Image 1 (cartoon, rainbow, N blue to C red):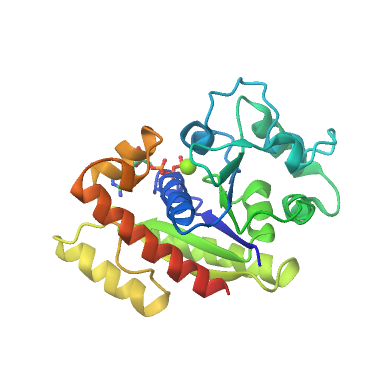
Image 2 (image 1 turned 120 degrees about the vertical axis):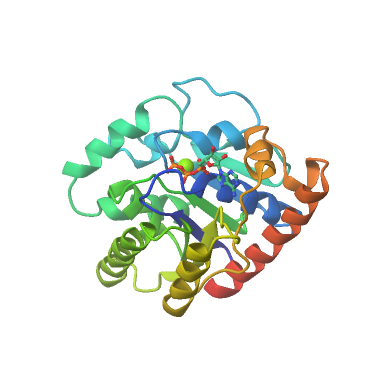
Length: 259
Ligand SMILES: Nc1ncnc2c1ncn2[C@@H]1O[C@H](COP(=O)(O)OP(=O)(O)OP(=O)(O)O)[C@@H](O)[C@H]1O
Ligand SMILES: [Mg+2]
């Protein structure tokens, strides 16, 4: 059975895209057939995970979501950097424009990505959706399309307010559009184990939410590998191989949480 996981947080730069990239690699390592969906107008995931450089006007997620175009996901999908991963890409300005179109679109706008994924024929075991840093119609489309959401956050007190807001949005999505949506867990990124405030913050969070353990450390290999479009296990360092195994356990935890 296919599982669809959205990676979300309206806060920018917390590590959503980096995490999506490494989760995709973990899934490929586990033999899954993966579709990575780039739901962020910035197109960062596409840049990392698409096999070829794509032109700015390449077909992409925007053409799937827009009511002005007829394209299906199958029409826009391109090959990813590893065998076993395909990409629904985002390039240029088009998804930013469709974001505006969705603001004024009529009934059913929240379901467009969900319906597009449902129309895909079999072949994919896992669909990973990288959401933009906003609580807009794009993120709503990502959540409505998903069986589970992985929340990526950083270990800072200031992030708590953002998590509350995101939780509220998830509750609204459940109530109005997608009752089955589960929170697969919270991935705490760039965790600073050494600081007392970091530990206190984490303990507090653990009492309120399902944390996917262990927290992701701050490690240059996580950014360097993703920016080089290379898996952690392929990067050639011991830290990389160790973190690849950590991402394998994250994937297992997430898949079990939404099963
Ligand atoms: N654990 C980590 N250790 C070191 N660097 C990291 C880690 N996680 C993310 N980064 C770096 O932090 C920056 C932000 O990460 P990323 O782009 O994944 O965040 P994002 O939440 O997707 O951002 P946006 O909200 O803009 O889409 C990137 O430069 C990335 O390489
Ligand atoms: Mg991102």
